[in-house]
Image 1 (cartoon, rainbow, N blue to C red):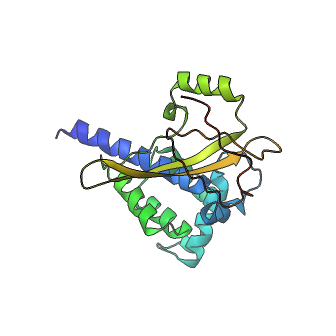
Image 2: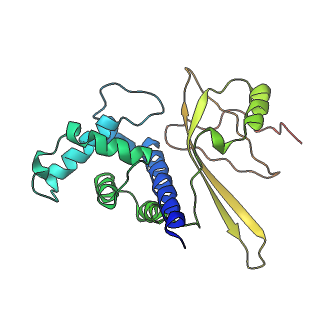
Image 3: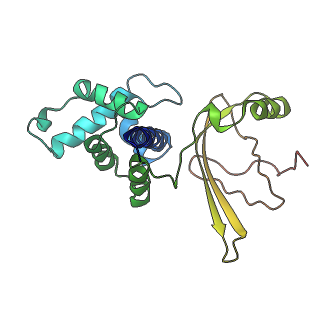
Length: 213
């Protein structure tokens, strides 16, 4: 493999790891609460880099790695956080610091490192490119303007010994972006579906209906 190809794969891996890292920090739950408690001005759907830097600094106070870590502060770490979360520069020590500070699960940590190392077996799709533009227009025309956003979407696919699909499980984390949201449209390509709500949801509202062929 040429150095150019190797470097390109490495860069793509770092960016993919950064995208997954942002996803973990945005997901409602313990990781998000770690940095949200330090937010001065919240912006829906965004990770506060200064708040994350504050969380990292506080972790270093109690768990110093290098001389001077006891004096770490958010302003000094903000650029490191910015480079890490945008994928411009996510070094090994920085990723280790994120993992230690937020306490990601072994599965999530393994996923981060595999992405960081440029594994071709997994990928992260985020942003508007995750949905074709025309498909987004068609859904918007059928269901109206979006009143929620998806923070993360994981598909778990089980394949049988015969190579055929046995079952799938989708974990989707959503967040309201409008007032008084008590339900969201949910699209799934199947004739048999079980939906379970959790976290801040109050339960299913209304019946499930087929809206397409």
